[in-house]
Image (cartoon, rainbow, N blue to C red; front, side, top):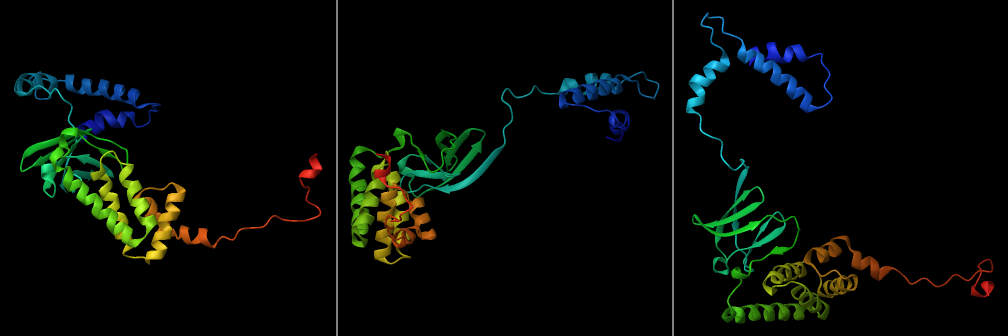
Length: 252
């Protein structure tokens, strides 16, 4: 390394390069000169010659596929048979609901393993809060009864709090292509209710529906900022009646 610093980098220290490509070209020229210069031991060999005779015959070819950084994570399959990776949800076969799985993140691919066996594979998505669902991962038709039971239970729990809570829960389930995925947000909505008075929570759900906000995150933001309370406190302002203000008759 010291030899390269003295023979390559030091002579270039006062040169000005306007792009990386030109710098790399000049470095390559100087490196080739070093490798072509004979050793001082009198054998006449060069660094490049020794590389070709000793190292090169034992080198393996480069892999066909470029190396990609790999990350591993643990995850638990939610009851909607999806796992969450960076705010996006990817499906796995419904048989693994409640199981802990290993997730491999490699480039644009996401692979899911259970006890060493790959059970799902997806292309990575940047759509936050949305699902990527493969049809073959969905429950079979004869298991829809369990889904309907869950839907009915969620609706009943929401109805017990207030009519607008029920309306929001139903809207959340209807906006998702698979109701199982909507269940996740509905459970979050009902958990939010535990920290607020029923009347205020029901009014916040009504306000969310008026704004067109049909998500758990939107409702949570309304409650945290008190936007529903502010909207209720804003008085209706009467039209200003003043002699200096021109009315519609002025322009006739």
